[in-house]
Image (cartoon, rainbow, N blue to C red; front, top):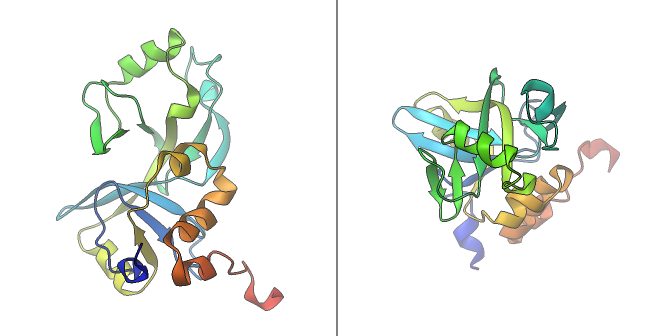
Length: 191
């Protein structure tokens, strides 16, 4: 892939990733990968993919004791709400983000699949809260070089890569200078 295609000039859009620049100091977004689920004139919405919580889904939802999956912190907005992305076709009202990747949908259908052991935990991620930007805010942050936009969205990265490795791996997928960024130390003075 041509290096210049990934010069941080890709436009954000539904189904693309935002990788925080290595020096972004906001504790909510330091070394995060966000999947954008909405980007339009009304603002942007996404979910931090690599910030797992210590809470299991079964701790907040009755009837999910056999479904062993941790919740993720989707972002700092409305952390009392539950959201999900998945790769399950046929879920009513799910929003397609790209082929084989969906946001939300009929929760009763998801619940029925879980209760009947028809849903593998590796096919769905649950989030408490979300990341949101008001109209124009994300564009301003992109102009300030706070984010790298990527269209390198793979099932492996989203559903199979450990959270601790996701930021680094997503930058390595981009190659060029982004591979160098992936090795940037947390504290440059300790280098």
